[in-house]
Image (cartoon, rainbow, N blue to C red):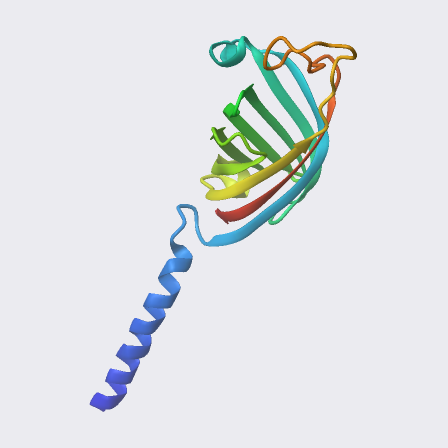
Length: 172
């Protein structure tokens, strides 16, 4: 009888050790998360960007797919700076209206950097997670421009082609 209870205790302890990491996320179980998006980036003025670059705000709107969400639309805004992005916010919206909220500040100067899932709505209320955002834009330049500064020859009056991928973990 003692042997049976020892076996049950050992199995219970083993299960506790293997199952608990799966519930480590704030909102539930950590799950793999990935997405891909294609759209356009546009530029405008926003007072929140004045301290970083004189007021230029990037806004990219795209469509795509994301795990746990299906077909999605995303909106990304940030203040572009030499060597990165400030005040980055991404909202990913599923067809059913549930949203996933992402934030980032990037000082890497690369097109691939860490992002943080910071809540959402619907089934993603309280969501958390970490991922890597990788993006590409097709820069448009002003014809015949002679550079006089960091952003001087970029044509910010026309949309630029934008694409991005996300890969990481999500807990909700």
